[in-house]
Image 1 (cartoon, rainbow, N blue to C red):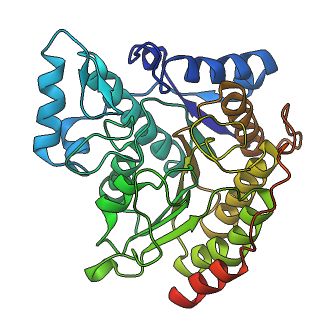
Image 2: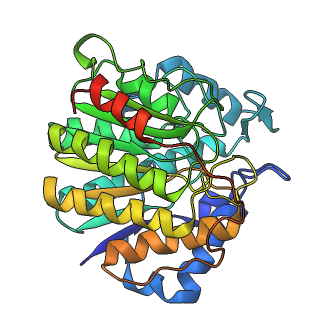
Length: 344
């Protein structure tokens, strides 16, 4: 099994002291890969920066122009309450999007069986016309458009299990029937959308599937929702490529959210995604780094994804099960409503 890995030292250059989305996140993942020897088992490919043309396949020109204006300055700019940009940030964001493009190229050219894009800044909140939620460019959306235009891929499944709704990715593909976008997220929560009735529009009606979970759901809820909703939806769509927005901020120790997933639960999600890809699209799957703000959970989570992609059996979970005794409500009513709404 060949697993490609695309990352770059430049991803540390987009950095702002005391901000949750800072360089230490990706450095923790790199250390974990190095300390465990996983780095030596991966096919390391050098990413190239995304071009204007590739970016504009998912973003409007005005958005790119704003980022270029920041690049001409000399200071940190707050694009909104949560999101910062430095003069170098556009270059870093181009490289992040380019790394996901390179990961897609690797699996679609059969250079690798599957791939990891260890990147920052993250991307899934960036809409066609604005940066938000720590995200500058929508890395996974840009790469999906590349798969369509460069490789002629007919159908792409994007599964987002970051704790926050992938609103930007949804916006890019809301009317595109060739992209099935599935988001499992805490709700109500930032960014405030991702409701059940957001299912797409026009030709894309039915191609957006939102799974809003109340705070406190953990491993068993995610297992059930994957088996009863995600897997049937994926099988019905029958994609040619799977892209995963993998955020580790639904882990029970994460400081920015209120879910109860463990690293073992996350590992189950990743392995089920890989099994789906093997059944549906010759194993062609790319995992893309999104959120996760406890550094140890993030690093061990990505260690587990890499191991799963390589076909290794071991799981690293230094935190174990949640310490909370809170019992999440039954996931059955939500699963039944989703199955009814989407004809599963």
